[in-house]
Image (tube, rainbow, N blue to C red; front, side, top):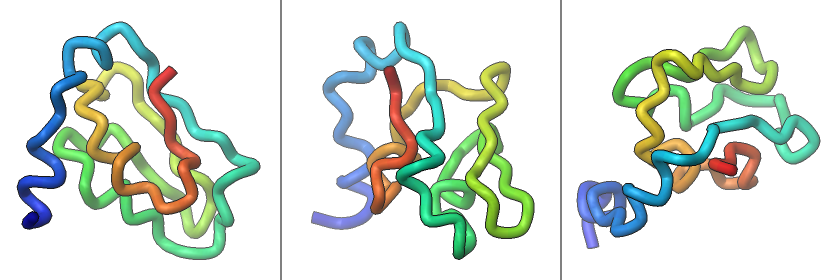
Length: 78
C-alpha cells in the first residue's frame, strides 16, 4: 500500500462531513513540527512554533487526512 492509497481510501467520507475537527491538546506532545499541518490539502491547520495546531473550521473540508496521519491521535473528528 502506498501513501496515496492510505489517504485516498476513505469510505466514511460522508460520515465525516457531519463532524467537527478538534485538537486534543493533552494528547499532543507540542515538541515538534506537526506532520498533519503539512498534509492538510486546504491549509486549515496552522502551528506556531511547537504549540498544538489550530484548526480553521471555515477552511476545513473534513477529509480526515490529518486525523489519519496524527501519530498521537490528538486530531479528532467528532
